[in-house]
Amino acid sequence: MPENVIKSMICTRRLFLAAATCNVIVTPLAAWASSGRFDAERELFTGGTPEISGGISLTIPPVAESGYTVPVRVLALESDTVIRQMRVFAPANPLVRVATFELGPMAQPLDLAFRIRLARSQTVTVLARTQDGRVLRADAPVDVVTGGCGFDLQVQP
Amino acid sequence: MTVQPRIKVPERARAGERITIRTLVSHPMESGLRADQSGGRIARRILNRFVCSFEGEVVLSCELEPAMAANPYFEFTVTVTRSGSFRFEWHEDGGAVIEAEAHIEVDD
Image (cartoon, rainbow over all chains, first blue to last red; front, side, top):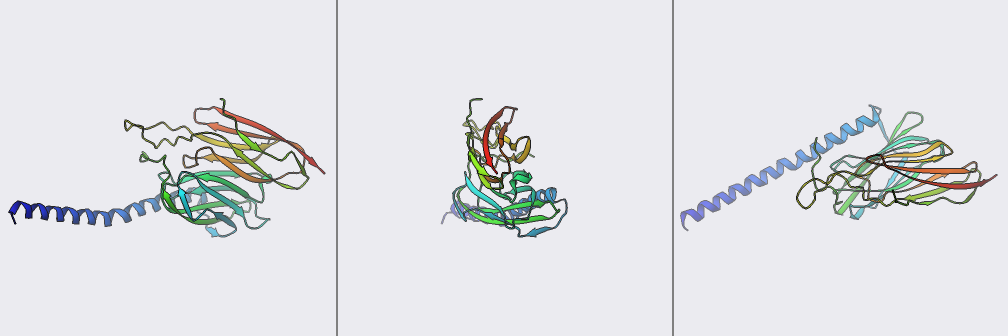
């Protein structure tokens, strides 16, 4: 085998290994970065109040054909739960925050549906602040077949 | 603006009844994160706030981010106790407002 072919093979193998290593490092880094953004966004909403799982339900189809429009429904599970504020998070979207709702007395008990965009498969989270100061949390994993277009570019910090 | 929102509010209800309100408005909700053909950024233009009020009292309001789907749709239940008008507002980036109203007769 001529020397230059062997050299190019080695080069390719080196490049491949380098790329593979990068991938192994970069993927968890991206996940870590996104969980950091998510933690910061949740903290902004809760102000340090512990999150309680339950009390509300979050319903999203487990498989979304298109991330462009994904139906979401949020329900207060008990009729005496008064929800004053609610925020929706998509941790793997370019922008974690999706929407923030303020709810008056007439909108109780909460039963609300709307549609969101998801860039890729992820677990959507809802946090709700009740009148008595608790923060309720619900999560729903969604497999997104085609990512929601409308997110071609990175967010500029 | 010529956008005509579509609103569904029952015409009549009994006092204390929970009714369902549905609203839909045509809007591209341009996220500001899309590229045009030359690779530039298409400017963000979304409806950033939705408010539903009843006789001046806020029923539900929403701060929308670019991750809300195009043609924003809301469906929610409301407990009605008296006759009156629901007012709906959508605020667009740049300050334009889309408005609509719907009256409901509530029987005791």
